[in-house]
Length: 273
Image (cartoon, rainbow, N blue to C red):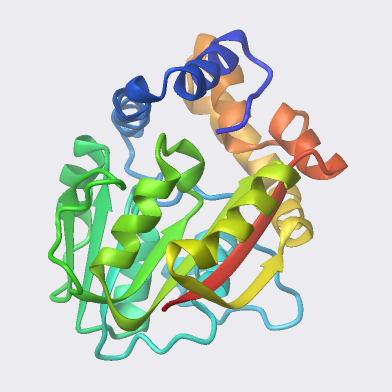
């Protein structure tokens, strides 16, 4: 995760990068804490969203409040037919995207894996669909069999992984022949270029890839007022700055870094070679 303005947020992020062995435990604590603070059960998504004025997503009324996070999910899997397929999402979080794709994409099976045991318990209670299940697990040690999935989805989660090479190896292991890896996340420009350069040597061929920083910033702009108000009303004052940093609200360091190019946000679909 990128540093925000609060000392607590900066220290937490620095430690996860400087001490990789501690990162899984620290991220698990962080997401479990967020889960416990969402007493109303409204935190279905934790991504920054995607603004699309050209082909806006048609949504059911119940899904409309989550337009921008859902449009990010649609952008990530664009061009992939999930019908009848086995789909794995790594870093499924609060399960909103998993439930929507399981419902609308009509996969045979959709499995969400997340590091946070609290999030998995909550998802099992909240999202009851016949083709959807959730399981606790690490990105670099996925609790699934070899070549058991057609598509792996990873939305805005990999920046917290201590072993990206291990994660990519796991994705390749669990994908079937010619399976696809649908990915989006943010990095510094140099780190993103490094990741692109390593895809082929890790056994993946890019099918499509795009810089979607502008669309992510537009989404953050459009939800900024409501998101800031929700944080002010529901988060204790001592936590507010850290949560604002985490949420990427206007005025946060993360927003500024996306805006001035110190961070870029990319999405890609890769085919297993």
